[in-house]
Image (cartoon, rainbow, N blue to C red; front, side, top):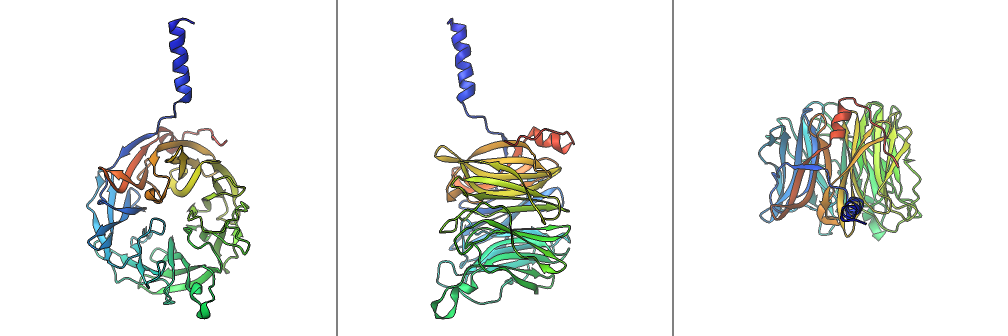
Length: 414
C-alpha cells in the first residue's frame, strides 16, 4: 500500500468512526440570571415566543419572562415572587397565551411542612405581562398535599382549561392513603373556576400531564397507574357528552414500582393530533410518537426513537407543515438533545443532534418552540457564561425550511 492509499484509508476510517457533527445551533443569549431553571416557551402573536423561567431572588424565587422576536429578547420582567415556593426540576411553572390575547401563568406555593405539600397558583394578564391579577388556585380542597404538573388548553378565546395532578385523596382521615388523581377545571375571565371534574382516580404520582385543544374538543394525555403498577399512557377527550373514559394510547405494558418522572407531550391542529412519550416497556428505553387524524379518537403508531439509549423528557411544537419533537438521548456517559421534524402523517422528515446536555436532572425538561416560519427554538438548563442557567438557541435546519416552502422530502423512519 502506497502513502496516498494509506491517507485515503485513514480518511475513510475517520469518516466512519467520528460522530456526526451537531446541527448548526445559534445561541440567542439568555435573559435569565445565574441559577435560573425551569424554562417554558409559549407562542405569541404568530411571530414571537415568550420564554418564562424561575430564578433565585434573595431568600426566595421569582417567575420571570422575556419576549423573543426577530431582533432577539426583550427585557426580562417579573410575573411574581415568593419566599415559600416549591421549586423543582420536574414540576415547573408555565405560561399560556389565550386566543383572545390574555396571558395565564402558574407557579407552585408550599402549603405545609411536608416536602410535597404545595398548591398550584395562577394569575392572568390582559396587557401582555405589564400587570397581573390577584393569584387564584384551580383547586379548593385545602389539603396540604401535592398539586402540580399543570397543562393547559384554550377552552374559549377568554377561558383557559387547566389539567393537573391532585393528591387530596392521599391525606385521608385515619392514615389510609388514597391515590394521586387527575383533575381539570376552567379558569374564567373573571377568575372563577368552573367545570371542575375528576378525569382519572388513579394515576402516576409525578409525571407531567399534556393537554391540547382539537377541532373536536380538548384532549389530555397522561401516565396512568394500574393496580399491578403498569404505567402506560392514556388519552381522555371532552365531547358533547362530557369527558370520555380513559383509553390506552399504546400497549407498552411498562410495569414499574415507582414514578419515572417522565411525562408525555401532545399538540393539535384542527383534527390532527401528535403525541410523544417515553417508555421502557419490554425493558428497553425508547421514545414513541403517534398521530391522529380524527381529533384523538384513534391514534396510529408513527415512529420509535432512541432504542436502548433514550432518556426521554419529550416536548412537541407545531411546525409549518407538521410538528417538531425534542428529547434527550444518552451518548456515552452524557446526554444529547435531539430534535426531529415530522409531517402530520407521522413521517420523520429530518433529525438533528443539537448538542450535549446533562442526562441527569441538571438539564431539566428542555422546551421546544417555533419562532417564525421554519426556525425551531430550544430552551434548557445548562452552562452559560460559566454559570448554570437557562439557555436558549435557534436550530438552523435546511430541511425544515425546505419543508416549510412545500418541498416534499421522503420519510426516514427506521
